[in-house]
Amino acid sequence: MCSLRVRCCLVATLSMLGLLTCAAQEGINGEATYIPFSVPGALGTYPMSINASMTVTGYYYISSTTTGGFVREADGTITTFSVPGSLWTEPESINAAGDIVGFFELVAGVPHSFLRYADGHIVRFDPPCSAGPPCNLSVPVGINAFGEVVGNYPFLAAGAPAGFSRSRAGVFTMIRSNLGADYGTVATGIDASGSVVGHWTNSSGEEVGFLSHPDGFWEPFAVPLAADQINCISATIPDSINAAGTIAGWYLTYTDSCSTKITGGFVLSPDGVFTLFQPPGTLVTLPSFDYTSTAPHWISIDQARDITGSYKDTDGAQHGFVRNSWGTITSFDPPRGGQTTPSSINDSGVIAGSYFYDWNTQIAQGFLRVPHP
Image (cartoon, rainbow, N blue to C red; front, side, top):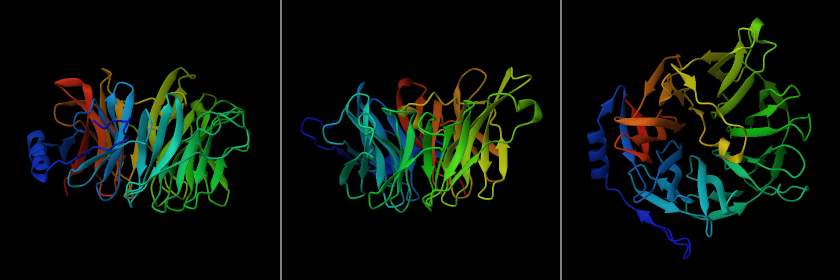
């Protein structure tokens, strides 16, 4: 294990032969091959993001209270890292160049941002704010191909949480609805143009989606409701946006005189057309906002508009799903796996996530789900 005291990094190499052997042992499930992996010696491995080059980033448990980050290359080589002096290092997103953003904690419960360049150089940052502590805390959730970052102020001395964007040059912009500081705003993703997607709490206490453009134009949106749902509490939670601006997320509403809860997923095209879908179970419910609720992403979308996420069946077991651009939904678990939590899909349709193997339900493993041509 990497010692935080001496601030070293552990580099563990997995041979290509070993990777292929492992994949063969796990076998083929449905229309995909599954490749399991773990950081050597970890007490849990949690992939968070995968790019087009098959490079994966995420975090792993060093102890029950300490985590480090990792990078897994396409050939299976795993490199671990931590922000020097941190108790907790959690990567959230990786872009095409291999740059990674995430948060770290020098003190438990006090998050700050980091940017780790592909060459291993780490830069720490927090967005500036005039209200004073604790508004100088931050949690990035995404980085695009041009190095633009989006994230959140999880706590503000005055007002509800707000989002932020950071340009490649280091210029920050706060993202908040025009209702003011008392209405929380949560950013969840950024596209190639620098537009930011997320959700905010309106004056009725409902969660509404938004798209914030680089020119400052704010575009709210919500899943259309049926006549018997209009007076019920609803939520539209955008969670992912691809480079072309197609948005995926989930929604919650009620029917039967507001007594029966309905959850489902949605896709929103760049021209404003909603498509709703329903996995074979109940979508995993997003908790009330705190900075840990921003990750892993509950739904992720690729450039081809394939979507991955997780749901719970009637017995409460969690499974992964993938929905292709034609609307076909496939449930999946890695062989002999459970509690499947997909967190990211790249533009080749390869999914990264975590699961529990049936003989060890205490230590999570990472997986890649590689679709067959």
